[in-house]
Every structure is written in C-alpha cells, then in structure tokens.
Amino acid sequence: MKRWKRNLALPVTMVAIALGFLISLQVQTQKNVSAAEQISAQRMIQMKAVLSNSQEQNAQLQKTHRELSERLDLARQQVGTDPQLLVHLKQLQMHAGTQAVEGPGIQISIDDRNKKVLFPLRTDDISRMINTLKLAGAEAISINDQRVVASTAIVLSGSSTILVNQVPINRSEGIPYELTAIGDQETLLDYFSKLEAVTLKQNGLTVSIARKTICIPSFKGAYSFQQAKPWDALIE
Image (cartoon, rainbow, N blue to C red; front, side, top):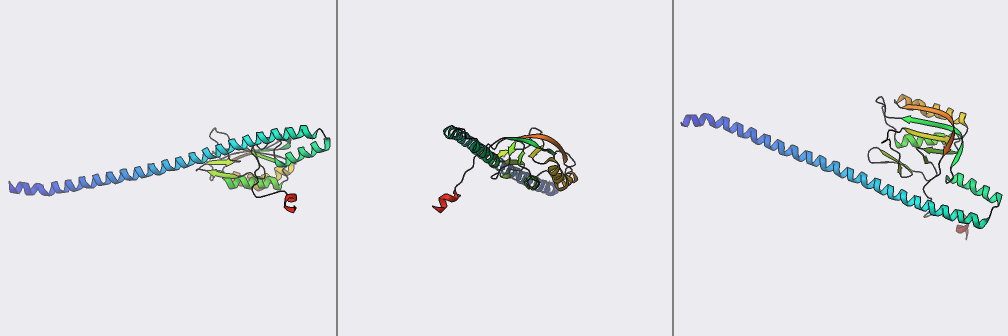
C-alpha cells in the first residue's frame, strides 16, 4: 500500500505543478487582455473628446460667422451703395476667403483606399499639395469643401481622422479627397502633375485631374485676433 502511494506521489505532484502553471498563465493572460482593453478604451475616450471639442468649436465659429455676416449686412445698409466701396469690400472678402468664388481651375481627386497604397495620405502631404497649388498661383483653394484660408490648420485627430478648419474630412462615407483650385488651368495642371501627382501615383494612390469651372465655398469659421492689432492703433 505504501509503495502504491509512493508510486502515485510523483505523477500527482507533476499534475499539480502543471495545473498551477496553467492557472497562473491563464490569470496573467487575462490581466494582459484587461490591460489592453483598458488602454483601447482610454484611447477611444480621448478621440471622442477631441472630436467633440472640435465640433463644439466649429459650431461656435459658425455662430460667430453668422453674427459677423449680419453686422456686415447692416454696415452695408448704413454705408449705402457706393460702387467703389462695395467693389473694394468684395475684393477684401475674396482675399479673406469669406466670399464664395467661381472661376476656371482644376479639380483633383485622390483615393488612398487602394490595396496597393504604400502610404495613406497624411496631413503633411495635404499641406504640401496646397502649397504647390499656391506656388502655381491658385487664387482660391478648397479640400473636401473646406476653404483654405490664412488661418487654416490641417491636423490629425486620433489615428486616422484629418481635420481641416477643425472639421473632419475623413473618408468614412467612401469619398476620396478632392482638391479644387481656381487659377490659370495650364499652370495649375503643370505644377501639380510634375511636383505631386507622380509621387502620389508611385505610392499606389489613384489620382485624377480635370480642368473645370470651379465653385469654391466661403470660409465658415471666423477670424479671431488676440494679440494682433491694426497698425493705426499701435501708432496711437
């Protein structure tokens, strides 16, 4: 009987050790899974917070834009209909991007959803393309219906959402990036084709450029100056 117990002792001990190891491994695995889920949840909360904040700011900017537009309309009524003054005012609005514009230009469609794409479009790629169009003499530029003005910021929110003027322009609805620019069509086409399109296509992106009569919307945000003041005020 004692010999039988001695013979079973070693196997039982080995089984107990194996079970203990498996239980310990399972507990550690569960801890790792829980930690990963917690990190993922925290990132999702942060992304939602950034997007919510951007949407709130955009709503406030739109409200400010409406208020300024109302004040501008009132000022027009008070000033009257001086042709030269109205023309000058319209030109200032066009320069500031607060006036929708139309004219000859090019429309550029860029799709980075192809499986052959080496590098998806990034914020610095968009900034570089916009600078190339400016270099080519573009008088007005927009991307996915967001007017590019002096205060336009192009930033990444989360892992894939790109914000322009604090508005998301992601492709959640399957829409590719669309750049539009008004200016000399041949110059715009030549600059973009040689300086941008070649590299984009080499990286697997689908690029198409068309000459069109372009309609570019106005900037829906508002300009806010905290430190800058008119030069006349500084002289005083």
